[in-house]
Length: 428
Image (tube, rainbow, N blue to C red; front, side, top):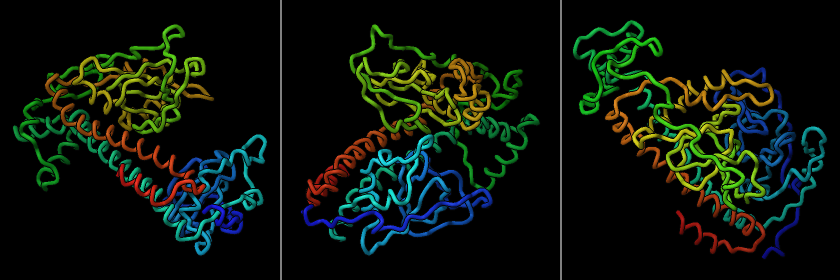
């Protein structure tokens, strides 16, 4: 019963420590954390045990649990936890319910202090119960993380195919090498690498796929050497830019809003429900299944995603690219989200406070236009990855909602551990 839970302060359970400057550290594999997350990877750690990291300045509700060596800068506290008194993971979940913003003692910059944190009241059940609660919530978080890592792998695999086919032109090089045809000088280094990969067995050819490619290159003024018979065009030849937008007259009474800040590296972290009256003025882009959205404000933040569900409304800070043909959808997404493309958008963004590009820059980006049969073949292969990513994202939403529902109920004692375990088993 909650009435039997011990009442303690955070200072009874942890020793709060200050982060340190990282500038003189060499690069390495240890995460260097700030209040906004991982800043870089360094060669030394401040601590190598379980710890909870709490912002000293900045985004005060961004707390982190770590169980590996880490370094923190001076905007982020770290903690030595008395694991004989409290389960570190349980304490992390309990602190997730705390509104640290309401404890702000700063003026211009939101801030927390050690005395303020030390006085924070904590309710503790027996240690065995703490561990059971942490295990339930941790099981959901672990599954969410596994799905996230799977999605990263799937996207990387599809992006590798895109690069091989449409950037490096490996199938064309393979056919040219077999036929003994000349390789253009700028492509000879890639051809030598490709030959070495084929000879060593690290790369294999697919005759069915290779039949869709020519065996020669031709020079173009716009893009240099490209496969013979292919065209040079723009992504606007494959997709329509910003095809639909809401106006004050036709916006629905209720919308699900996708903001730039909630979109990162191919994933929409959350959508926000709004009434048409309360919706932000920038909530105008009508999104549909198979759209690709690219953030045009601070494009280096990688605010891009593939739209898997209808019924969403996006910010005007997105360029929305809707495929003219279904076969174009995978090519558009992976073409516009290449690292070098995002880096290019970032390099030409203008403006001091909010560096941005015009949506037309995205649509007008030059690209090779392969034959329709090859676009169809790529979509067949790549969309299997995209679809799986969408399914995992939807599953993670279900897991996240369950975790967020269970968290306050378990921490308040409202829900019994056995009942929570049953709910978790139903979704796993």
